[in-house]
Image (cartoon, rainbow, N blue to C red; front, side):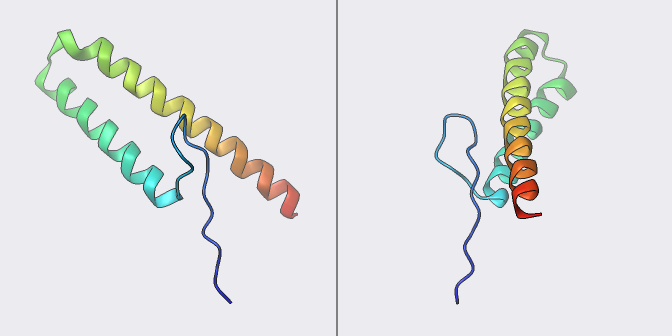
Length: 73
């Protein structure tokens, strides 16, 4: 019996596994952290938008996970 891999909608992208989401979020946060470390103020608004995009995508994924946990209980 094969184990089904769970996927979650992540923004406008195709559904992704938890591992794919973690890797994508890490890349975005790493890019933002590098900009903040370099104190490049011109890029802060662009990075703020990226950070908020990741925030909302993760929030929606969390909501779906919680809903699935309730259904399974």
